[in-house]
Every structure is written in structure tokens, then in C-alpha cells.
Amino acid sequence: MASPGAHETLTPGNTATGITSTVILPTSGDFSGIYAVGALITVETNIINFCIDGSTPTAAAGTNIGHQMDAGQSYYIEDQQGVAQFKCIDRVSGSASKVKVTTFF
Image (cartoon, rainbow, N blue to C red):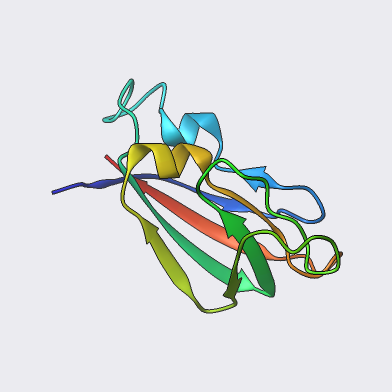
């Protein structure tokens, strides 16, 4: 069973943003040198589009690439590759979304 180990808050804005490399592969602490095998993603404010397949999500007014996740919704990524490839962007340009991430090891 995986244990929670690192966390951060993402504010993607108009640029596709991924999980910080040191949250995926910590350089200190109990999980130093170990890759995250899962991540809990929660949207705190507004709406995002996200991808976990290596694609770059876009805003709805653009090409609208990615899955939509609304404020209050959560998603668990169950594999190392999906964690590494996660990217999100504000669904509506300039909406200042806040996304919480906790990685599991």
C-alpha cells in the first residue's frame, strides 16, 4: 500500500503546468530517490482541463484538449507514468485555479 509523502499547490493559469519534479522524485526525507507511484489531485477553485497521457491541455476557448475537473472534485492517478505526465491549465483563461497535489510512494 502506498504512503503519502509530498504535496504542493499548483496555480496553472494560462500555461499548462505539471507536478514539480521534486514532488515526484524527492531529494530528501523518507522518500528521497523514490518515484511517486500515485497522486491525489483536487481542484480547490475554478475549473481545469488536465491530461495524463503526455498531451498538453488547452483552455476551452482554444482547442479544448483534456478532461474537465471542477472545483471540489478529486482524481487519483494510479501509476508512475501518469503522475509524471500530469499537466493542467485553467479551463477559462485568467480564472486563477488552485490545484492541490499529494503524491504517494
